[in-house]
Structures are given as C-alpha cells and as structure tokens.
Image 1 (cartoon, one colour):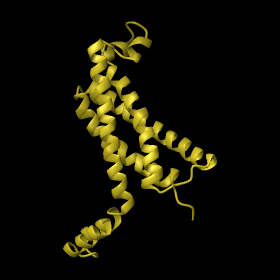
Image 2 (cartoon, one colour):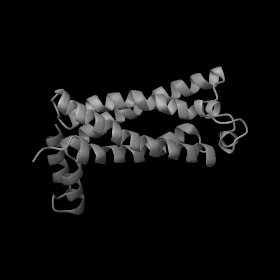
Image 3 (cartoon, helix red, strand yellow):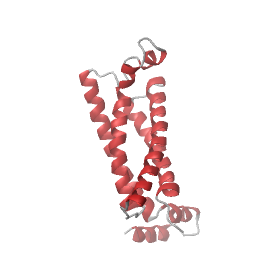
Image 4 (cartoon, one colour):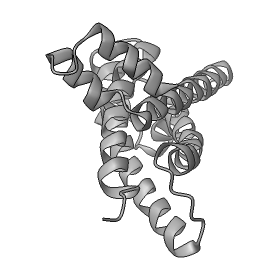
Length: 180
C-alpha cells in the first residue's frame, strides 16, 4: 500500500525534484508505521494525561512535588499549589512507554526476538532514551505551563512534537538498529 502511494506521488512529483527526493527519503514504510503508532501513542498519552489531570483536580491533589518540597520554599511558591499536571504527565508517560516499546519493537523496527539478552538490552536502551526525552518533556511542560502560563493541553501538544522527533532518532540510531 505504501509503495503504491509512493508511486502515485512520484507521478505527481518527479523523483529527481526536490519534493520527490523528500518523498523518497521520508515516505518509507518504517516512517509511516512509526507515525501511525506514534499517533496512537500520542492519543493514549493525551487521554491518560487528561484523565489523571482532571481526576487530580477534582480531588484537590496539588501534586507530589508540592507535597515533598519544603513549605514556603521558592519552588513550592513557583508551583503555586498546582503541580498535579506533572504527576498526570508521569503516569501518562509510563503507560505510553510500555505501549511504544512493544509497537516500536514489533511493527516499526521489526525486532522480533524476545530472547532476554536481545529484548532486555533493547528495553533498557529504550527506557534510557525515553527517560532522557521525558526529562526534556517535563522541563518544557514546566516552562510552558508554570512560567509562560500556556494551557496544559496546548503545552503538551507543542512538547509532543519535540519528543516524537527525539524518540524516533534514539530508536532508529541506538535501540533497534539493524546489524550490518
């Protein structure tokens, strides 16, 4: 199916043209499948984030960081009693990473081995890369929501684009790389 779409696109844009070269480079089965599962993971992340954020707000949860920071500290004042969005983001991240690992392993990068040595190495590398992008995501969410007062869901959307690109690069180059 993807090949047929590529052929149609090459009929519209010559393969040697600038757009044709972009299509040739970026409209591959791997990238299309990554985007498909990335959209599913993003939707899952947003839904879980929204559910937990609304739940935390409804019960008056101020967030773990609010509860562990010393009363009256600079950081606690900075959060001004609402760090629940960070907790909701953590929960959404954990659930999404598990989903993303399985879909990336099996369908995006076609790594079919579940031998502990292979899958374990991939999982550790995947978690490490996702932790790195999670730190970036959390820092960006903090800056956008707390410092710039951009609404949570809009911030999550903006940050999500950066995270998707980072995660693809890490997965492609370091985690599910093909052996030569």
